[in-house]
Amino acid sequence: MRRVALIYNPVSGRPHAQRAMLIAAALAELRRAGVEADAVETRAAGTAGEQAREAVARGCDAVLACGGDGTVNEVLQGMIGTEAALGVVPLGTANALAIDLGLPSQSARAARVLLTYEPVRIAVGQVSFCRGGSKPTSRYFTVAAGIGPDAHLMYHLNVQLKRRYGYPVYIAEALRVWATHSYPLFDVELCNGSGIRRERVSQVLAVRIGDFGGMLRRLAPGAELSHDHLRLVLFKTRSRLRYLRYMTAILFGREPRVPDIELLDATTVECRLPAGAANRTYVEADGELLGTLPAKVEIVPGAVNLLMPPASSRKRLVDDLAAKLKRSPEC
Image (cartoon, rainbow, N blue to C red; front, top):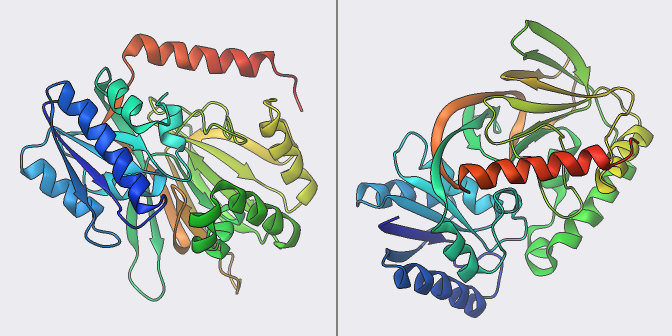
């Protein structure tokens, strides 16, 4: 890294003074290493992608998204197809991508570690969806896309409470959704390299990262950023008990073998409501509510340069996670 822009949202997450201190600490760490680094405030909601493109046009060879997975997702939109590298300084409520990349939670330490990382061209997910009465649109993601109860949770999540109390608000809303949601079924058609499959499901998770950290840990065993496919979790059930069994296995680090919940790889999955269905089924990506069905999720190979640990460190991280899962009893 020679010239870097640190993009952050000045009104989300942490109190303003604390956020300013953390950004300043990251800047100081980079400048101490001889990197030309500047902080860039987002102008408004949804402008981070455009500002990332502007930073690259000014000659920045790296753009660091300073925030949670939502901020990273916004910045990502402007980095697709460029040669500049995307990096993460975790400052948000949910920092799943940063956790998967092995980044520390302190901003200065994260900046120091990023100096040792290397840009790796990786695939990203892309989800096309409907929003209101407008034409279908699309969005890229690096962590996961969810269709069904997961996105239903995002639809009902109180943003102000999330900003004030953080992760516990997710847990409380997830429990409420689990207890009250009707789990309506919808149709999926997926391509997994050996042909087309059709299923009827209550939820699809299309996952790209191997380690979410915290309680979720390995939400979709087998998912890795280095893969050129999506790791799908298909919930072919409306049973609350089976949802609970799957999540309990994940929480305790066990291999989740639950009837009618299947893990598989795919490059494309299309989702639509059955004929005559009147309910809305929501779509989210990287924790941000996008819209409703119909939707298509697909993999885009070689889409972005991501600052990642050196190859030897990445292999060690993957091996450690695989070993932990192997030692865990089945559920």
